[in-house]
Image (cartoon, rainbow, N blue to C red; front, top):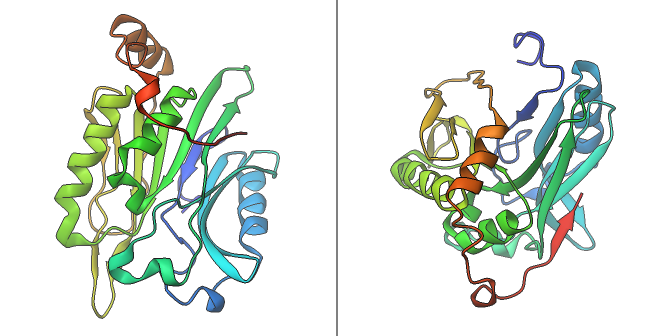
Length: 242
């Protein structure tokens, strides 16, 4: 897909949750320790930032992870899913992450972008998004294996997260079918005001959009909802600044 995408140098490329395998409660079968190496090889080859999703061993357990690799071929940020999906017993097979990540990306012109990666079920917990926004996140990525029956929830919640945090949302979802679950895909990119900039269908697809982050910053300055927030009501969250 990266080969077909054309020139992606300097772009931020987002893959679904557990992009290598699809979601699984058998992480021991798919966590081979090579996922970050793969991401780094591809990001360096194509000169892009690449957010890759995979299962990773941690101690005697596993984490549901995304890592962002740089155009130089280095992992610059990692995020472990903080909210595990109990209806499918994810919490019995993985450790939950305990912090939010904000990655500071730069391009060849030294322009910067602050990105907060999230994973699937995290979408239903706005407090972690809020902490990331207050730490400077301007764009959120959501890597997901979100099932088709709740596709409307995903779209509505992503729009809410974009509006309330005055941030761009890049939501990448898997497609296809399993014996007990179907995935509608419908990846999309939302503006900081919740408008749909690009949307995919239910088959494998390359989705692109160009974002002017100056518009995001101008809107935050004009409509200071984040500045008016009462932070003392939010509680504590550890931020990993990468």
